[in-house]
Figure (cartoon, rainbow, N blue to C red):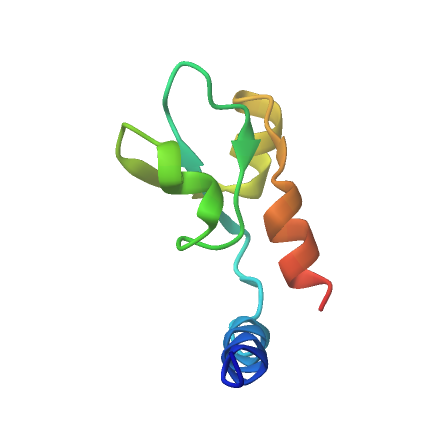
Length: 79
């Protein structure tokens, strides 16, 4: 149990070293119930994705696919 705080700190530090993309590229799961876009290809929101993960431009994700930003990615990018 003494190592739990150290492990949590290490995981948080790993998240901070992976900044959001600046190229305008975002990621989508194309499953029938998917309605979010993601800033990180390793987002936990993809855990239940049963299709391939696609990369598209932010404009395509918002206008063409009517997606909104994943809350986990939003929290991660604000750290």
